[in-house]
Image (cartoon, rainbow, N blue to C red; front, side, top):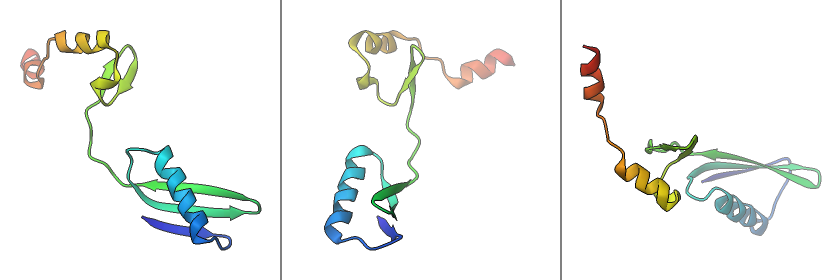
Length: 95
């Protein structure tokens, strides 16, 4: 991860605290760059993420999740009971 301190100087300990904060806030995302912008008494944090591979998204009751395990038991059963249709079947319907 590349770290840029803009607008002043910051000790290593303080930089490490901001890295820990961002890592906890964005759990599961890979950070490629972090800009720490000193603005008087405040610090602005700009986070850049690495591109990630596409993950399957599941739609359930008008909200999206990337893992079926995040759904309650009833919704998990609903997905297990659903009849799956392949893309080929849809294409053949139109021909």
